[in-house]
Image (cartoon, rainbow over all chains, first blue to last red):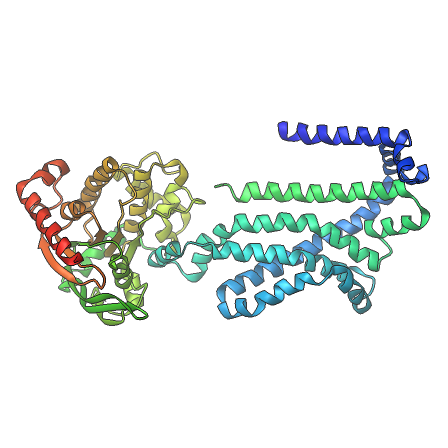
Length: 250
Length: 269
């Protein structure tokens, strides 16, 4: 209960303060802005409700990109981590490249991908997967490498095949760390989605934020950000639920 | 492909009649330049229980890994059940490591039944086979417990049953009770003595506790400091007596203990 009440209380307080600061015009005055550029929570809520269909449509588009992107990153990332764990040479050869791949700013690579693959779903999935690949792969790899070599020896004298050693010892050992990586991935995936949509898209929450920039529809921009954050929170919640179900021994 | 427990338990008797179940001849091992084992000779007959005592870090655990086929010797020959191929040895030895290494994602009974599951038995029959041993070895009622819910002594019992249930003729036990407190250790020694009376196996027991070795084993080989060689082999006066306290205070036992300690001191110089 405490874990729900405390953040909810803090959030309510912050929203309340913001409401006071905006409805009195204090923020607008402080930054010498037109009042309509600094929407109050009430105005944002109004926009959220008024644009619910538009937001839902675009949220669905973005959610689809995010889910496919994360799934791709999970499949490729875990597969790659297993291969790197299995073949030392592959690990040594590709580890620096994987780290380097993470240093490429998404905002730089996104336009190139749009040029190559067009405005459709594939470049967005690719960009989100690229963002999520690193935390998932590194977490899975570290998890696999934390396996106790004594346990592997014991399993060998208990007639375990390589496959059985993997499923009965190595995979469960790696699971908690894999979930740590997954939690990071689901939170940064929406950021990747927004970048991908900014560069080339005619739908989705990222696209909506960019389009509203032109109309100075600041309340709707805030409303979109609220939806995006809610989406990340829900994904995070689902990941934590899955973790609790699968990692029961912790 | 699916061994019933009854078949599994018959394996030791089938392996009898070969003379030595386990035979080491001139075994040496080195890590790079560092010689760890220097010309070790050891013969263990089927059903024999041999203790290896020696100073810490002398290579006792390495020796067990060599026997089990988990490592290659640098020289000499190791045969288990007449075969010296590493994978054949691996198939005939079950290894119980120092730490219990129970897998936290399995219940106690699933940990104990691991070998049967690895050998292809389905979960139901594997659990049933393990449950039988749980009852016989004082673990009845703890089948579904998570390893974290068990006491140190119980975890060690489950780890031993896991080794026993594999149905291998040779058990390699690496300091199985080193992590336990003195009272629990004495209890566990009595428990293991009982277990070996009812389920005889060929056992190589590594320990740094001379008393434990003399109480549990038929013979004790005293190893020197690195590079390890066999300083002396002692025959044990009383074999796995039911009353540990009476046994360890027996005059012949005390004399054997003093002799072993003397050899140990000699070897570590």
